[in-house]
Image (cartoon, rainbow over all chains, first blue to last red; front, top):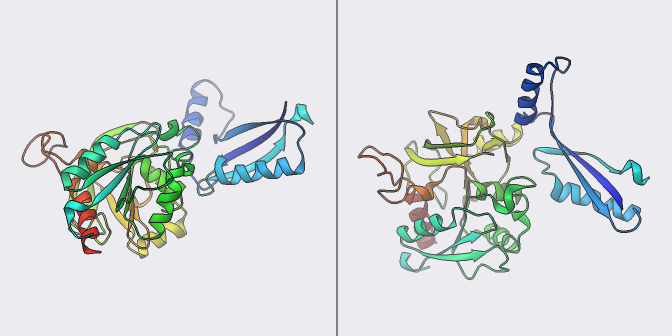
Length: 85
Length: 237
């Protein structure tokens, strides 16, 4: 089934406590290459039928109104899943 | 509204609400009638005020309070709040009110990442709201606090506006338990009828069940005046 992918990230100016905790754990496990981590969310919206412009518009609206809170988060991408292109 | 005894205060239950029964009990102890409201209700059953209680509505799966904001009953609450009805959001209820844009800002995970449960001291900053008129400005009260996503955040412009307009109602005193900006524990809207706070006044309304106070263990009832304040503001209006 075709899928639309919505990626949501905490805004850059919002301190991301979860990402910070992960960043703290990485060097303890020997991963010393990474200076910081930010943790976001990925939504996979399965679409019945084809992904039209209308479907993408609806996904963008859902991303803005429900899937993200604009006060703390940015919708960074609304894309068609690679394997469905 | 003519008499306190006639005040009807609604308490909403969403799937995952935990503190609706305590909130209803607090309303009754304050002297009003507690009216149970269901998340699927289209109207508010003629209540005079609404409490949006704490818990983990819809499991908080998307974000705290995000799905509840779209429950049928919230359409009625948003309309009524914009019309001036007193609305109190406690903990998850506060999160629901920010998601509903009735209050500014948002709550994110506590800065230390842990669930926190403690008897929290609060500094009362604003006593002109529908829910705080029976407190004294500068008073320090103790009510329980328990949350995972209790860190209040907002952009600098919003924080400045809250400060400049006196809309910070409570600040954490002694300890900031979750990293909230400007030690904010609770805020109000411009009109003063909508108040949200992370700590739980409904758990400090009856001696024997509340936090520890000066006169002994579990004797604290500092939370009761939220509810008597609402009744007083209804009687006055």
